[in-house]
Length: 271
Ligand SMILES: C[S@@+](CC[C@H](N)C(=O)[O-])C[C@H]1O[C@@H](n2cnc3c(N)ncnc32)[C@H](O)[C@@H]1O
Image (cartoon, rainbow, N blue to C red; front, side, top):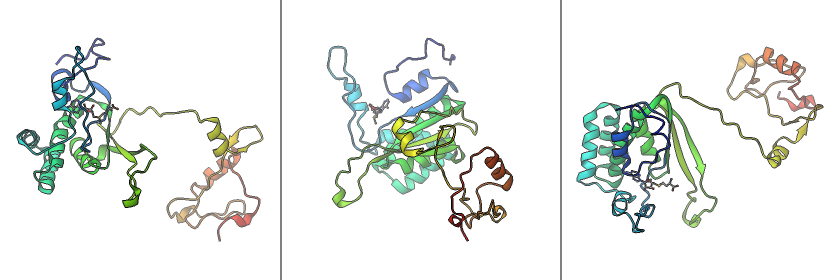
């Protein structure tokens, strides 16, 4: 397949993504994938596109219903993945044992070949963000482990989608979605996102001001784990029983850089 040219970039493909991926997208040509597929949560997405004459596209109506059933097509898709072998086939076989003939198995059999294609088109430094929700996120994480390898899992980003909790009289409201972030290799390209804080956030979270007029806040220097080797007194202050978060050398460096705030009372420490 020829490499993607500038002409191909910024192009919107209309159709079934499995066919588009297989027919048009070369290996290792994509930096980042974000996908928001149907979630198997029984919604219909069939009114997105209209034909030029204003009627709705019949093919879209049948193609994009978010309802899945175990039928011949699902079984074929399942068999194709099994034939490819490897970890993803192992995952699908395990799903079949657990979910035999269910709608969920049909949904996973639809997702698996698409995830395999998505891995193929990603560059070695590429990343994929799979948006889903708790209906299927636990199965999709196993499937992603099968396709990308568990070591390529980076984060399960929890997105608070809404604050309106429906039907809380019978349980906890379902207000979050999941975004599973995997990379293709151990060295994904990562551009650290920096976003300026709003004025109100600065005021509420950085309430103190130093001699140079710079806003700051304090946090403790307690080690999250138990570190007996980081138990040393510093200027009369004792650490939390876990130990300090930093070595004595680093503590002195912070002190020289004027980054330490000493509580007025030395009793603020721990015995
Ligand atoms: C959860 S919705 C995404 C909604 C979208 N992110 C938005 O904010 O409007 C899932 C979308 O996947 C599309 N879809 C489902 N199956 C597809 C397929 N095989 N190929 C391409 N798109 C598909 C549906 O038409 C629907 O628009």
